[in-house]
Image 1 (cartoon, rainbow, N blue to C red):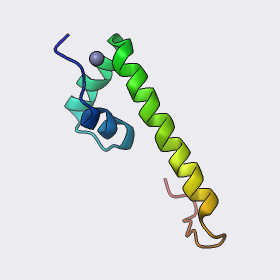
Image 2 (image 1 turned 90 degrees about the vertical axis):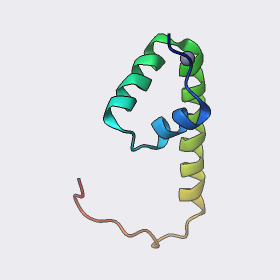
Image 3 (image 1 turned 135 degrees about the vertical axis):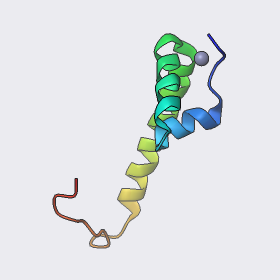
Length: 70
Ligand SMILES: [Zn+2]
């Protein structure tokens, strides 16, 4: 192992976008490192909760959705 990912690197993986080669290397490290994997899961969960709370607090109708934006 070349060393564990930093908090900033993990955050970038959760938030994206990540440069392709780096992202590949980081994800490969995650697969082999339960320690980083746990931290990554924690960050991802935090982010999901924040998004849910924001969605709940947002007044209805303020969201501008584009149809079939993909
Ligand atoms: Zn690690």
